[in-house]
Length: 487
Ligand SMILES: *Cc1c(COP(=O)(O)O)cnc(C)c1O
Figure (cartoon, rainbow, N blue to C red):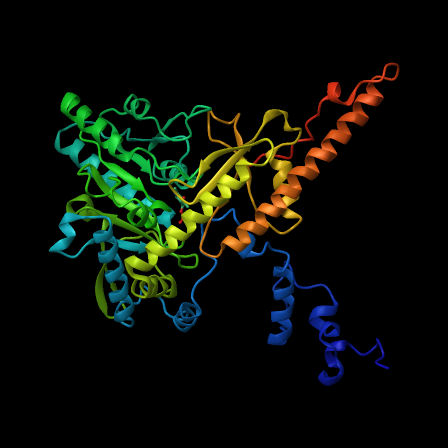
Protein backbone atom coordinates (compact mmCIF):
# COMPACT_ATOMS: atom_id res chain seq x y z
CA UNK A 1 0.00 0.00 0.00
CA UNK A 2 1.25 3.44 -0.90
CA UNK A 3 2.14 5.33 2.24
CA UNK A 4 0.63 8.79 2.41
CA UNK A 5 4.07 9.94 3.62
CA UNK A 6 5.37 9.47 0.10
CA UNK A 7 4.19 12.43 -1.93
CA UNK A 8 2.07 11.13 -4.77
CA UNK A 9 4.21 13.01 -7.25
CA UNK A 10 7.17 10.81 -6.32
CA UNK A 11 5.38 7.49 -6.60
CA UNK A 12 6.22 5.48 -9.71
CA UNK A 13 3.85 6.74 -12.37
CA UNK A 14 2.51 3.31 -13.29
CA UNK A 15 0.92 2.86 -9.86
CA UNK A 16 -0.83 6.25 -9.83
CA UNK A 17 -4.42 6.08 -11.01
CA UNK A 18 -5.21 9.19 -13.07
CA UNK A 19 -7.33 10.96 -10.48
CA UNK A 20 -4.91 10.19 -7.64
CA UNK A 21 -1.98 11.92 -9.32
CA UNK A 22 -0.69 15.09 -7.75
CA UNK A 23 -2.44 17.50 -10.08
CA UNK A 24 -5.84 15.94 -9.63
CA UNK A 25 -5.94 14.87 -5.98
CA UNK A 26 -5.25 18.28 -4.45
CA UNK A 27 -6.32 21.86 -5.01
CA UNK A 28 -5.24 23.38 -8.33
CA UNK A 29 -3.27 26.59 -8.77
CA UNK A 30 -5.74 29.47 -8.94
CA UNK A 31 -3.93 32.68 -8.04
CA UNK A 32 -0.19 32.05 -8.11
CA UNK A 33 1.73 30.79 -11.07
CA UNK A 34 2.70 27.35 -9.71
CA UNK A 35 6.37 26.62 -8.98
CA UNK A 36 6.20 23.32 -10.77
CA UNK A 37 4.20 22.15 -13.69
CA UNK A 38 2.40 18.89 -14.31
CA UNK A 39 2.18 16.26 -17.00
CA UNK A 40 0.36 17.42 -20.14
CA UNK A 41 -2.22 14.66 -19.81
CA UNK A 42 -2.97 15.65 -16.22
CA UNK A 43 -3.23 19.35 -17.05
CA UNK A 44 -5.48 18.45 -19.94
CA UNK A 45 -7.78 16.31 -17.79
CA UNK A 46 -7.93 18.97 -15.10
CA UNK A 47 -8.99 21.73 -17.43
CA UNK A 48 -11.16 19.50 -19.56
CA UNK A 49 -13.13 18.48 -16.47
CA UNK A 50 -13.60 22.02 -15.21
CA UNK A 51 -14.89 23.11 -18.59
CA UNK A 52 -17.58 20.44 -18.40
CA UNK A 53 -19.30 22.88 -16.05
CA UNK A 54 -19.89 25.21 -19.01
CA UNK A 55 -23.04 24.90 -21.02
CA UNK A 56 -22.95 22.55 -23.98
CA UNK A 57 -22.37 24.82 -27.01
CA UNK A 58 -24.78 22.78 -29.14
CA UNK A 59 -27.59 23.50 -26.66
CA UNK A 60 -26.65 27.16 -26.28
CA UNK A 61 -29.48 28.85 -28.14
CA UNK A 62 -28.53 32.20 -26.65
CA UNK A 63 -25.65 32.77 -28.99
CA UNK A 64 -25.56 33.80 -32.63
CA UNK A 65 -22.01 32.55 -32.79
CA UNK A 66 -21.06 29.42 -34.73
CA UNK A 67 -20.65 26.19 -32.80
CA UNK A 68 -20.43 23.77 -35.70
CA UNK A 69 -18.14 23.62 -38.72
CA UNK A 70 -17.33 20.88 -41.22
CA UNK A 71 -14.65 18.44 -39.98
CA UNK A 72 -12.52 19.56 -42.96
CA UNK A 73 -12.75 23.15 -41.70
CA UNK A 74 -11.73 21.96 -38.23
CA UNK A 75 -8.60 20.39 -39.78
CA UNK A 76 -7.74 23.46 -41.80
CA UNK A 77 -8.21 25.77 -38.86
CA UNK A 78 -6.12 23.56 -36.56
CA UNK A 79 -3.37 23.58 -39.21
CA UNK A 80 -3.30 27.39 -39.31
CA UNK A 81 -3.67 28.07 -35.59
CA UNK A 82 0.05 28.86 -35.35
CA UNK A 83 -0.02 31.62 -37.96
CA UNK A 84 -0.29 35.28 -37.10
CA UNK A 85 -2.48 36.97 -39.66
CA UNK A 86 -0.55 40.22 -39.28
CA UNK A 87 2.75 38.75 -40.57
CA UNK A 88 2.07 39.80 -44.14
CA UNK A 89 5.57 39.08 -45.45
CA UNK A 90 5.76 35.65 -43.90
CA UNK A 91 2.24 34.56 -44.70
CA UNK A 92 1.36 36.33 -47.93
CA UNK A 93 -1.12 33.64 -48.89
CA UNK A 94 -3.12 34.21 -45.71
CA UNK A 95 -3.28 37.89 -46.68
CA UNK A 96 -4.45 36.87 -50.14
CA UNK A 97 -7.28 34.81 -48.66
CA UNK A 98 -8.32 37.75 -46.49
CA UNK A 99 -8.38 40.05 -49.54
CA UNK A 100 -10.47 37.54 -51.45
CA UNK A 101 -12.99 37.45 -48.59
CA UNK A 102 -13.19 41.27 -48.53
CA UNK A 103 -13.81 41.34 -52.27
CA UNK A 104 -16.43 38.60 -52.15
CA UNK A 105 -18.28 40.33 -49.32
CA UNK A 106 -18.14 43.70 -51.01
CA UNK A 107 -19.72 42.17 -54.11
CA UNK A 108 -22.23 40.20 -52.05
CA UNK A 109 -23.29 43.55 -50.59
CA UNK A 110 -23.59 45.02 -54.09
CA UNK A 111 -20.87 47.60 -54.00
CA UNK A 112 -20.91 48.90 -57.57
CA UNK A 113 -17.42 50.30 -57.15
CA UNK A 114 -15.93 46.97 -56.22
CA UNK A 115 -16.43 45.61 -59.70
CA UNK A 116 -13.48 47.27 -61.32
CA UNK A 117 -11.29 47.88 -58.27
CA UNK A 118 -10.14 46.13 -55.16
CA UNK A 119 -12.82 46.37 -52.52
CA UNK A 120 -12.19 48.47 -49.42
CA UNK A 121 -12.48 46.65 -46.13
CA UNK A 122 -10.70 44.49 -43.62
CA UNK A 123 -10.99 41.45 -41.40
CA UNK A 124 -11.51 42.17 -37.72
CA UNK A 125 -11.88 40.15 -34.57
CA UNK A 126 -15.66 40.51 -34.78
CA UNK A 127 -18.37 43.03 -35.49
CA UNK A 128 -17.40 45.05 -32.44
CA UNK A 129 -13.97 45.94 -33.82
CA UNK A 130 -15.54 46.41 -37.25
CA UNK A 131 -18.06 48.83 -35.78
CA UNK A 132 -15.39 50.81 -33.96
CA UNK A 133 -13.50 51.18 -37.24
CA UNK A 134 -16.62 52.17 -39.19
CA UNK A 135 -17.57 54.63 -36.43
CA UNK A 136 -14.12 56.20 -36.53
CA UNK A 137 -14.31 56.56 -40.31
CA UNK A 138 -17.67 58.36 -39.95
CA UNK A 139 -16.28 60.60 -37.23
CA UNK A 140 -13.15 61.52 -39.21
CA UNK A 141 -15.13 62.16 -42.40
CA UNK A 142 -17.59 64.39 -40.57
CA UNK A 143 -14.77 66.26 -38.87
CA UNK A 144 -12.89 66.86 -42.12
CA UNK A 145 -16.04 68.25 -43.73
CA UNK A 146 -16.71 70.53 -40.76
CA UNK A 147 -13.12 71.77 -40.73
CA UNK A 148 -13.11 72.51 -44.41
CA UNK A 149 -16.27 74.55 -43.89
CA UNK A 150 -14.68 76.40 -40.98
CA UNK A 151 -17.32 74.98 -38.63
CA UNK A 152 -16.90 73.71 -35.06
CA UNK A 153 -16.24 69.98 -34.81
CA UNK A 154 -16.14 69.31 -31.08
CA UNK A 155 -19.58 67.80 -30.53
CA UNK A 156 -20.15 64.80 -32.81
CA UNK A 157 -23.22 62.63 -32.27
CA UNK A 158 -24.45 59.31 -33.58
CA UNK A 159 -28.11 58.39 -34.00
CA UNK A 160 -29.26 54.81 -33.40
CA UNK A 161 -32.07 52.75 -31.91
CA UNK A 162 -32.15 51.99 -28.19
CA UNK A 163 -31.84 48.34 -29.24
CA UNK A 164 -28.23 48.63 -30.46
CA UNK A 165 -25.73 46.02 -29.35
CA UNK A 166 -23.46 47.14 -26.50
CA UNK A 167 -20.49 47.68 -28.84
CA UNK A 168 -22.16 50.87 -30.11
CA UNK A 169 -22.39 52.23 -26.58
CA UNK A 170 -18.73 51.36 -26.17
CA UNK A 171 -17.81 53.11 -29.41
CA UNK A 172 -19.60 56.26 -28.29
CA UNK A 173 -17.88 56.27 -24.90
CA UNK A 174 -14.40 55.23 -26.02
CA UNK A 175 -14.27 57.65 -28.93
CA UNK A 176 -16.12 60.58 -27.42
CA UNK A 177 -19.19 60.67 -29.58
CA UNK A 178 -22.54 61.61 -28.09
CA UNK A 179 -24.90 58.65 -28.46
CA UNK A 180 -28.45 59.61 -29.40
CA UNK A 181 -30.77 56.69 -28.85
CA UNK A 182 -34.17 56.49 -30.45
CA UNK A 183 -36.37 55.17 -27.64
CA UNK A 184 -38.33 51.99 -28.28
CA UNK A 185 -41.96 51.58 -27.27
CA UNK A 186 -43.74 48.55 -25.82
CA UNK A 187 -44.89 47.75 -29.38
CA UNK A 188 -41.88 48.92 -31.47
CA UNK A 189 -38.62 47.10 -30.75
CA UNK A 190 -36.50 48.70 -33.48
CA UNK A 191 -35.62 52.23 -34.56
CA UNK A 192 -38.45 54.55 -35.65
CA UNK A 193 -37.63 56.54 -38.79
CA UNK A 194 -39.30 59.86 -37.93
CA UNK A 195 -38.09 59.55 -34.32
CA UNK A 196 -34.54 59.08 -35.63
CA UNK A 197 -34.78 62.07 -37.96
CA UNK A 198 -35.82 64.26 -35.03
CA UNK A 199 -32.42 63.50 -33.43
CA UNK A 200 -30.28 64.25 -36.50
CA UNK A 201 -28.51 67.59 -36.79
CA UNK A 202 -25.41 69.11 -38.38
CA UNK A 203 -23.21 67.29 -35.84
CA UNK A 204 -24.53 63.83 -36.66
CA UNK A 205 -21.67 61.69 -37.96
CA UNK A 206 -24.01 58.91 -39.05
CA UNK A 207 -27.20 56.97 -38.49
CA UNK A 208 -27.04 53.27 -37.66
CA UNK A 209 -29.46 50.78 -39.16
CA UNK A 210 -29.41 47.25 -37.75
CA UNK A 211 -29.95 44.31 -40.04
CA UNK A 212 -31.13 41.92 -37.44
CA UNK A 213 -31.72 43.35 -33.97
CA UNK A 214 -30.13 41.16 -31.34
CA UNK A 215 -33.30 41.50 -29.27
CA UNK A 216 -35.84 40.14 -31.73
CA UNK A 217 -34.02 39.37 -34.98
CA UNK A 218 -36.09 42.03 -36.80
CA UNK A 219 -34.53 44.05 -39.60
CA UNK A 220 -34.62 47.81 -39.20
CA UNK A 221 -36.11 49.81 -42.08
CA UNK A 222 -32.79 50.74 -43.73
CA UNK A 223 -34.25 51.93 -47.06
CA UNK A 224 -36.74 54.16 -45.21
CA UNK A 225 -33.96 55.59 -43.06
CA UNK A 226 -31.98 56.38 -46.22
CA UNK A 227 -34.98 58.01 -47.93
CA UNK A 228 -35.69 60.14 -44.87
CA UNK A 229 -32.05 61.22 -44.72
CA UNK A 230 -32.13 62.09 -48.44
CA UNK A 231 -35.12 64.35 -47.73
CA UNK A 232 -33.35 65.88 -44.73
CA UNK A 233 -30.26 66.48 -46.86
CA UNK A 234 -32.39 68.31 -49.47
CA UNK A 235 -34.12 70.35 -46.79
CA UNK A 236 -31.22 71.18 -44.47
CA UNK A 237 -28.07 70.29 -46.34
CA UNK A 238 -26.95 67.70 -43.76
CA UNK A 239 -25.40 64.89 -45.73
CA UNK A 240 -25.48 62.12 -43.12
CA UNK A 241 -24.23 58.61 -44.00
CA UNK A 242 -25.84 55.37 -42.90
CA UNK A 243 -23.83 52.51 -41.47
CA UNK A 244 -25.55 49.13 -41.53
CA UNK A 245 -24.83 46.87 -38.58
CA UNK A 246 -25.42 43.61 -40.42
CA UNK A 247 -23.61 41.51 -37.80
CA UNK A 248 -26.11 38.70 -38.29
CA UNK A 249 -28.24 39.72 -41.27
CA UNK A 250 -25.33 40.31 -43.64
CA UNK A 251 -25.13 36.56 -44.21
CA UNK A 252 -28.88 35.97 -44.11
CA UNK A 253 -30.66 38.68 -46.12
CA UNK A 254 -28.60 38.23 -49.34
CA UNK A 255 -29.71 34.60 -49.48
CA UNK A 256 -33.26 34.73 -48.13
CA UNK A 257 -34.45 38.18 -49.21
CA UNK A 258 -32.25 39.17 -52.17
CA UNK A 259 -34.75 41.87 -53.21
CA UNK A 260 -34.60 43.64 -49.86
CA UNK A 261 -32.74 46.93 -50.29
CA UNK A 262 -30.42 47.40 -47.35
CA UNK A 263 -26.86 47.38 -48.72
CA UNK A 264 -24.67 49.43 -51.09
CA UNK A 265 -27.53 49.53 -53.63
CA UNK A 266 -28.69 52.38 -51.40
CA UNK A 267 -26.29 55.26 -52.13
CA UNK A 268 -26.57 56.55 -48.57
CA UNK A 269 -25.15 53.34 -47.13
CA UNK A 270 -21.42 54.02 -46.75
CA UNK A 271 -20.26 51.08 -44.67
CA UNK A 272 -21.40 47.68 -43.48
CA UNK A 273 -20.14 45.31 -40.79
CA UNK A 274 -20.82 41.61 -40.60
CA UNK A 275 -19.74 38.91 -38.14
CA UNK A 276 -18.03 36.04 -39.93
CA UNK A 277 -18.54 34.05 -36.75
CA UNK A 278 -22.32 34.42 -36.76
CA UNK A 279 -24.20 33.39 -39.91
CA UNK A 280 -20.87 33.51 -41.77
CA UNK A 281 -20.54 30.09 -40.09
CA UNK A 282 -16.98 30.38 -38.70
CA UNK A 283 -15.97 29.72 -35.07
CA UNK A 284 -15.59 32.88 -32.94
CA UNK A 285 -12.92 35.39 -33.83
CA UNK A 286 -13.74 36.95 -37.19
CA UNK A 287 -15.72 39.94 -38.42
CA UNK A 288 -15.60 42.17 -41.46
CA UNK A 289 -16.08 45.82 -42.26
CA UNK A 290 -16.60 46.96 -45.82
CA UNK A 291 -16.77 50.50 -47.18
CA UNK A 292 -18.63 51.57 -50.29
CA UNK A 293 -15.50 53.19 -51.74
CA UNK A 294 -12.03 54.38 -50.82
CA UNK A 295 -13.46 57.89 -50.31
CA UNK A 296 -15.41 56.64 -47.30
CA UNK A 297 -12.31 55.52 -45.43
CA UNK A 298 -10.24 58.59 -44.48
CA UNK A 299 -6.58 58.08 -45.37
CA UNK A 300 -5.42 59.36 -41.99
CA UNK A 301 -6.85 56.21 -40.37
CA UNK A 302 -4.61 53.95 -42.44
CA UNK A 303 -1.15 53.18 -41.14
CA UNK A 304 1.71 52.17 -43.37
CA UNK A 305 3.48 49.75 -41.08
CA UNK A 306 7.05 48.65 -41.62
CA UNK A 307 7.20 45.25 -40.05
CA UNK A 308 9.42 42.23 -40.47
CA UNK A 309 10.78 43.36 -43.77
CA UNK A 310 7.78 44.78 -45.56
CA UNK A 311 5.52 47.80 -45.58
CA UNK A 312 1.79 47.32 -45.47
CA UNK A 313 -1.37 49.35 -45.05
CA UNK A 314 -3.03 48.54 -41.76
CA UNK A 315 -6.28 49.76 -40.30
CA UNK A 316 -7.45 48.06 -37.16
CA UNK A 317 -7.57 48.32 -33.40
CA UNK A 318 -5.73 45.02 -33.05
CA UNK A 319 -2.36 43.99 -34.39
CA UNK A 320 -1.65 40.28 -33.95
CA UNK A 321 -4.49 37.87 -34.45
CA UNK A 322 -5.02 34.25 -35.41
CA UNK A 323 -5.11 33.41 -39.10
CA UNK A 324 -7.33 30.37 -38.75
CA UNK A 325 -10.65 32.22 -38.62
CA UNK A 326 -9.84 34.02 -41.86
CA UNK A 327 -8.86 30.71 -43.41
CA UNK A 328 -12.10 29.20 -42.08
CA UNK A 329 -14.10 32.02 -43.68
CA UNK A 330 -12.50 31.49 -47.07
CA UNK A 331 -13.05 27.75 -46.70
CA UNK A 332 -16.77 28.34 -46.17
CA UNK A 333 -16.97 30.69 -49.15
CA UNK A 334 -15.46 28.21 -51.59
CA UNK A 335 -16.96 25.12 -49.97
CA UNK A 336 -20.53 26.44 -49.77
CA UNK A 337 -20.79 29.09 -52.43
CA UNK A 338 -23.94 31.17 -52.69
CA UNK A 339 -25.94 28.04 -53.18
CA UNK A 340 -24.70 26.38 -50.00
CA UNK A 341 -25.31 29.46 -47.87
CA UNK A 342 -28.78 29.75 -49.36
CA UNK A 343 -29.63 26.14 -48.57
CA UNK A 344 -28.42 26.51 -44.99
CA UNK A 345 -30.29 29.78 -44.41
CA UNK A 346 -33.46 28.32 -45.90
CA UNK A 347 -33.23 25.30 -43.62
CA UNK A 348 -32.71 27.53 -40.58
CA UNK A 349 -35.64 29.75 -41.53
CA UNK A 350 -37.84 26.69 -41.97
CA UNK A 351 -36.87 25.38 -38.52
CA UNK A 352 -37.50 28.81 -36.99
CA UNK A 353 -40.94 29.07 -38.60
CA UNK A 354 -41.83 25.58 -37.48
CA UNK A 355 -40.72 26.26 -33.92
CA UNK A 356 -42.55 29.61 -33.77
CA UNK A 357 -45.78 28.02 -34.97
CA UNK A 358 -45.46 25.17 -32.47
CA UNK A 359 -44.65 27.49 -29.56
CA UNK A 360 -47.66 29.65 -30.39
CA UNK A 361 -49.82 26.60 -29.55
CA UNK A 362 -48.56 26.47 -25.97
CA UNK A 363 -50.78 28.09 -23.33
CA UNK A 364 -49.88 31.71 -22.57
CA UNK A 365 -47.14 31.94 -25.21
CA UNK A 366 -47.21 34.98 -27.47
CA UNK A 367 -44.69 34.96 -30.34
CA UNK A 368 -43.04 38.35 -30.85
CA UNK A 369 -40.76 37.39 -33.77
CA UNK A 370 -41.35 34.23 -35.78
CA UNK A 371 -38.13 34.03 -37.77
CA UNK A 372 -39.31 36.16 -40.69
CA UNK A 373 -36.08 38.18 -40.79
CA UNK A 374 -33.26 36.47 -38.91
CA UNK A 375 -34.07 32.83 -38.10
CA UNK A 376 -34.72 33.83 -34.51
CA UNK A 377 -37.79 33.02 -32.45
CA UNK A 378 -38.66 35.47 -29.74
CA UNK A 379 -41.67 35.09 -27.48
CA UNK A 380 -43.26 36.47 -24.37
CA UNK A 381 -45.63 35.01 -21.78
CA UNK A 382 -49.13 36.12 -20.88
CA UNK A 383 -49.19 38.31 -17.77
CA UNK A 384 -51.61 35.98 -15.98
CA UNK A 385 -49.80 32.73 -16.66
CA UNK A 386 -48.42 32.73 -13.12
CA UNK A 387 -44.67 32.57 -13.83
CA UNK A 388 -42.29 34.67 -15.83
CA UNK A 389 -39.79 34.21 -18.65
CA UNK A 390 -36.90 34.03 -16.17
CA UNK A 391 -38.46 31.04 -14.41
CA UNK A 392 -39.02 29.29 -17.74
CA UNK A 393 -35.43 29.96 -18.77
CA UNK A 394 -34.20 28.47 -15.47
CA UNK A 395 -36.39 25.40 -15.88
CA UNK A 396 -35.08 24.75 -19.41
CA UNK A 397 -31.56 24.96 -18.06
CA UNK A 398 -32.23 21.77 -16.07
CA UNK A 399 -32.23 19.91 -19.36
CA UNK A 400 -29.14 21.75 -20.58
CA UNK A 401 -30.90 24.20 -22.93
CA UNK A 402 -29.72 27.77 -22.75
CA UNK A 403 -32.64 29.95 -23.78
CA UNK A 404 -32.02 33.47 -22.48
CA UNK A 405 -34.73 35.59 -20.92
CA UNK A 406 -34.27 39.34 -20.93
CA UNK A 407 -36.04 42.66 -20.95
CA UNK A 408 -36.27 44.81 -24.06
CA UNK A 409 -34.12 47.96 -24.28
CA UNK A 410 -35.01 51.40 -22.93
CA UNK A 411 -38.66 52.37 -22.91
CA UNK A 412 -39.80 48.88 -23.77
CA UNK A 413 -38.43 47.30 -20.56
CA UNK A 414 -41.93 46.34 -19.53
CA UNK A 415 -41.68 43.60 -22.16
CA UNK A 416 -39.65 40.54 -21.14
CA UNK A 417 -39.02 37.80 -23.67
CA UNK A 418 -37.25 34.53 -24.32
CA UNK A 419 -35.22 34.06 -27.49
CA UNK A 420 -34.11 31.04 -29.48
CA UNK A 421 -31.43 31.67 -32.10
CA UNK A 422 -31.81 29.01 -34.76
CA UNK A 423 -28.27 28.26 -35.92
CA UNK A 424 -26.55 25.68 -38.07
CA UNK A 425 -26.50 22.73 -35.65
CA UNK A 426 -30.08 23.10 -34.41
CA UNK A 427 -31.65 20.45 -36.57
CA UNK A 428 -35.38 19.91 -36.83
CA UNK A 429 -34.93 16.89 -34.58
CA UNK A 430 -33.25 18.99 -31.88
CA UNK A 431 -35.92 21.66 -32.28
CA UNK A 432 -38.53 18.96 -31.60
CA UNK A 433 -36.65 17.93 -28.45
CA UNK A 434 -36.57 21.57 -27.38
CA UNK A 435 -40.31 21.92 -27.97
CA UNK A 436 -41.01 18.80 -25.89
CA UNK A 437 -38.93 20.18 -23.01
CA UNK A 438 -40.50 23.60 -23.35
CA UNK A 439 -43.98 22.06 -23.21
CA UNK A 440 -43.05 20.08 -20.11
CA UNK A 441 -41.54 23.17 -18.48
CA UNK A 442 -44.60 25.34 -19.14
CA UNK A 443 -46.95 22.72 -17.73
CA UNK A 444 -44.72 22.09 -14.74
CA UNK A 445 -44.53 25.78 -13.90
CA UNK A 446 -48.27 26.25 -14.40
CA UNK A 447 -49.01 23.38 -12.04
CA UNK A 448 -46.51 24.30 -9.34
CA UNK A 449 -47.38 27.99 -9.36
CA UNK A 450 -51.09 27.12 -9.12
CA UNK A 451 -50.33 24.94 -6.12
CA UNK A 452 -48.28 27.68 -4.50
CA UNK A 453 -51.10 30.13 -5.06
CA UNK A 454 -53.65 27.77 -3.58
CA UNK A 455 -51.52 27.15 -0.51
CA UNK A 456 -50.87 30.87 -0.12
CA UNK A 457 -54.57 31.63 -0.39
CA UNK A 458 -55.41 28.96 2.19
CA UNK A 459 -52.96 30.40 4.73
CA UNK A 460 -53.99 33.98 4.07
CA UNK A 461 -57.69 33.32 4.67
CA UNK A 462 -57.93 31.13 7.75
CA UNK A 463 -61.69 31.49 8.22
CA UNK A 464 -63.35 31.21 4.83
CA UNK A 465 -62.24 28.71 2.24
CA UNK A 466 -61.30 30.43 -0.99
CA UNK A 467 -62.11 28.57 -4.18
CA UNK A 468 -59.00 27.74 -6.18
CA UNK A 469 -60.21 29.66 -9.21
CA UNK A 470 -60.74 32.84 -7.19
CA UNK A 471 -57.28 32.60 -5.68
CA UNK A 472 -55.78 32.86 -9.10
CA UNK A 473 -52.09 32.34 -9.57
CA UNK A 474 -49.40 34.37 -7.95
CA UNK A 475 -46.26 35.10 -9.89
CA UNK A 476 -43.19 33.23 -8.72
CA UNK A 477 -40.30 35.34 -7.49
CA UNK A 478 -38.59 37.04 -10.40
CA UNK A 479 -34.97 36.21 -10.87
CA UNK A 480 -32.67 39.11 -11.70
CA UNK A 481 -33.45 40.20 -15.27
CA UNK A 482 -30.56 40.53 -17.68
CA UNK A 483 -30.27 43.91 -19.29
CA UNK A 484 -28.72 42.94 -22.61
CA UNK A 485 -29.56 40.16 -24.96
CA UNK A 486 -26.74 37.66 -25.10
CA UNK A 487 -25.08 37.42 -28.46
C1 LIG B 1 -23.31 40.33 -32.32
C2 LIG B 1 -23.62 41.70 -32.71
C3 LIG B 1 -22.67 42.71 -32.56
C4 LIG B 1 -21.31 42.44 -31.95
O1 LIG B 1 -20.63 41.57 -32.77
P1 LIG B 1 -19.38 40.67 -32.33
O2 LIG B 1 -19.07 39.98 -33.60
O3 LIG B 1 -19.87 39.78 -31.25
O4 LIG B 1 -18.30 41.59 -31.87
C5 LIG B 1 -23.00 43.97 -32.97
N1 LIG B 1 -24.21 44.23 -33.50
C6 LIG B 1 -25.15 43.29 -33.66
C7 LIG B 1 -26.46 43.65 -34.29
C8 LIG B 1 -24.89 41.99 -33.26
O5 LIG B 1 -25.82 41.04 -33.41
